Structure formats: C-alpha cells, structure tokens
Image (cartoon, rainbow, N blue to C red; front, side):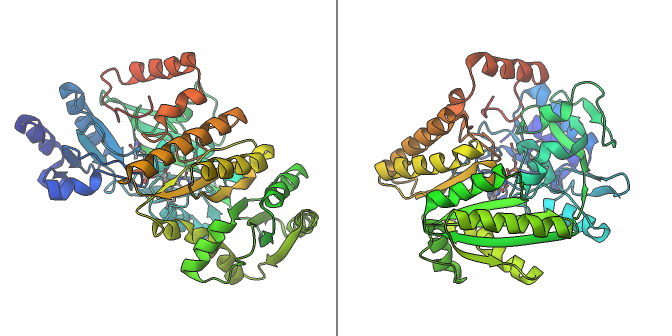
Amino acid sequence: MLETQIKNELIKIVGKDRYLDRQEEIFCYAYDAFLVESLPDAVIFPETTHEVSKILQAASRHKIPVTGRGAGTSLCGASVPIRQGIVLCFSKMDKIIEVNTRDRHIIVQPGVVNADVQKALLPFRFFYPPDPGSMNTSTIGGNIAMNAGGPRCLKYGVTADYILGMEVVLASGKIIRFGSKNIKDVTGYKLSSLFCGSEGTLGVITEATLKVMPIPEAVKTLMVTFDNLDNTAKAVTDIIGSGIIPVAMELMDKLTLNAIEDSANLGLDRKAEGSLLIEIDGVMEACEKEMKKIIEKVKKNGAVNIQTAASELERESLWTARRSAYGVFAKLAPDIITEDVTVPVSKVPLMIRQIMEIADRYGLKAYILAHAGDGNMHPMIPTDKENKDDWEKVEKAFSEIFQAAAKLGGTLSGEHGIGLAKAPYLPFVMNKDTMDFIKTIKQAVDPDLILNPGKFV
Ligand SMILES: Cc1cc2nc3c(=O)[nH]c(=O)nc-3n(C[C@H](O)[C@H](O)[C@H](O)COP(=O)(O)OP(=O)(O)OC[C@H]3O[C@@H](n4cnc5c(N)ncnc54)[C@H](O)[C@@H]3O)c2cc1C
C-alpha cells in the first residue's frame, strides 16, 4: 500500500472511485497471460491525458513504479507490476476520437479494443491490418506498446507500420506529440518507432493516429493437409519464393490438429502430419491466378487434401480450427508456455525439426503452431509450473530453442515481445554495446526508472 499522503495526492487527481488498493480489488491486476504474479500497491483508472500527466508527476516525485495496462493479455509478463507501485489501467480511456477514411486514419484513445477499431471502420469498407489473436480483448495501447502482429501481418506488416502519430506522457509528466495525420511524414526522427514495442518502459501512450486500409475486393482461403511436416514447411517457402505473398499462411502440426479435434470436433484430418491455412486477397482475377499457382505448389509438395472456401461461411469454418487453438491448449495442462521464435522463412523447415528434436530430448511434447509465412513460430509446451522437475526441463528446452533460432539468423520474438519471459535471453540476439545503447535511451527518457521497471531494459 502507498503511504497515506501519496494515496491522498493520487485520489485528488482521479477521485476515490478510480483509485483501488484493497487486495480483493487489485488482485486481478497482479498478472497477465504469462505465469508471474506481483500485486501492485494501487490501480488507477485515468480518463484524460491531463490526469495521466498529473499521476506521472506524482509518481516521479515519490519515485513510485508505474506499469501501464490495457487488457492484460501479454504473453510474456510485460504488464505484471513486478516492482509493485501503480498500475495505470486504460479501460476508461476507450474513445474513438475520429474516423476519417478519406485521409485514411482513425484516432483513438489507448484503451480502445482492437476489434472495436475494426467495427468502426467496417461501414466504410476499411480495416486496420494488425490482427492479434487477442483482438477481441487487447487494446490499441497494449498493441502499440508490444508492437503486436497477427496472421495477416505476413502481407500487411505489424503495428509499427500503421502508426501515423502519437501522444505520449513521459515519466516527468510532460506531454509530447509526434507524427501527424499524414500518410507521408519524414519530419525528424520517427519517434513512433521508439515507443512502439517499448513495452511501457519509455512513456505512456494516451492517443494514437492509426493508418487504415481499404478492404480488398476479393478474399480466397484454402486449407491443405500433408502427410509429412517437412513438406508442409517446404510448401511455405516454395509459395513465398514464387513471388506470392499471401495475407496469412498458418501452419499446424499433427499434435495441434489432434488436440483441436479432440476438443472442438471440427472434422479435421487426424492422420495429417501438418496443415496450412492460406489466405490471399486483392482483385478477383489476380486472386484466382495466385490461387492456381498456390495449388500447384502445394501439390508439388505432396498435399493430401485441399479444401477451398466457396463462401464466407466456409471461410469462417476453415479459420475456426486455427482460432480455437489457444482455448484448446489452455485445457491441456495447468500451464502452457507459448513461445514466439522467428526465423527467416527459408529456415522454417529446419527450425521445426530442431524444436521437435529439443522437446523430444527433454521428454516434452511441443505443439507447433506458426505464422509460417513470416517465419514466426509458436511452439507450445504444456506443463505444470508447480512441478519443479518438469518446469526445469521446459526452461532448458526453451533456452535451447531460443539459441537454435538465433543460430539460424532468427530472433526471440516475432510479436509477443520480451517482458519478463525472454529478458534473460536477450544476449543471444544482441551484443553488449547494443544493450548499453538501449539502456542509454531508457536513462535519458526515464532517469528515475519508474516506467515498468524490471522488464527487458
Ligand atoms: C489468446 C491470445 C492470443 C494472442 N495473440 C497474439 C497475436 O496473434 N499477436 C500478438 O502480437 N500478440 C498476441 N497476444 C499477446 C497480447 O495480446 C499482445 O501483446 C497485446 O498487444 C497486448 O495488449 P493488451 O491490451 O492486453 O496489453 P497489456 O497486456 O495490458 O500490456 C502489454 C504491455 O503494454 C504496456 N501498455 C499497455 N497500455 C499502455 C499504454 N497506454 N501506454 C504504454 N504502455 C502500455 C504494458 O505496460 C505492457 O508492457 C495474444 C495473447 C493471448 C492471450
């Protein structure tokens, strides 16, 4: 709990109703979708940028840690207040400020849920491309702070590619605005890239201007199964190598397909060793041409079963299996570790083999789910954190998986970020001088280290 004088100072800014500190009220702000818990001293719900600024001024004065929170869906512990202090929760800053499809932007507060941005754009036949699997709950503030991606980022890119402008409150309480509503703007440093992916360690995002895109005329979706996982992965590199960039190319292995089938009964092919869900979009004729080429490529790689969606309903049903995955895995064991290593696409087949080999060696089951077209793998290992032996094996296996990815020219995270989960492994992909440079930036922007301390910086 914060000292009474500090508590009163903060209540003066937001009022009693938007300040929580009773254990039963703040317990659910102690964790996110990772495994670590840490109870904050208080949870505050600001409604305006001015309030955020005042709160940060007070936090700076008293050197109290401040951790921003959207929906708490981080898979790497990024939103856990590991050094206690204040959790700033943005659920009351959830307004869409402007929708302007002529100038191709939407302006939102940080607590707006990603799916609500999509809903606001749909009547204009526009969309916002970043589509994390958590889009029905995760917020734009959280998406920006984590530089979130999703299946369609293969063609459209990640959150950082869609930020035109931002308003940020610094640790000192100063309010800065950068970027603009212009699609082109090269006025000085691209500061949005600094804050995007900073996991709340450099500033608090209070408003964002996002670039939006027109919904393409046609979408074609297909699901293919293979009797060999290697061939499944090779089909991915063949398609990309032929010059086709699908919207999404989602890979699932046999274990994953069977786990989903056990739980959801969708009629998936239990014998398949691997499957690909491929989606393309664009103008109709181009889509038809590309689809033919894709079918040629998957056949060449020994496709066993090819299913194309003839209607929106069929398309949705093809996506159901992929979308069910996280829910299904949550039921497999007390804990499930979802990782996020990413390798150059040509290395996908090799990386999959190495993940299997490492998991096997530790006697663990690795379920493979991947945004395979951009080399982003989500190996998932069910475990029980309370079982020390099991947990040690999982940690060792993932450490080896991270190292293997780094050796293949890959990286620790394609979209879930670093947070608490992957901070110890940063030296696999960054040298000391680079880490020092990151620390220099942090020190300059947040000299008292109050913003989301204990995380990757
Ligand atoms: C089922 C499931 C599926 C997922 N699928 C994907 C996926 O496909 N792609 C993907 O990229 N991620 C995915 N994620 C991870 C997670 O949803 C994303 O990282 C998401 O961007 C987090 O948003 P949030 O609103 O929940 O943020 P939180 O978890 O609340 O916070 C995340 C980070 O952002 C910071 N933060 C939050 N708001 C602000 C703010 N206003 N200013 C500054 N910092 C802030 C927090 O301090 C924290 O460091 C998934 C998670 C789950 C549980």
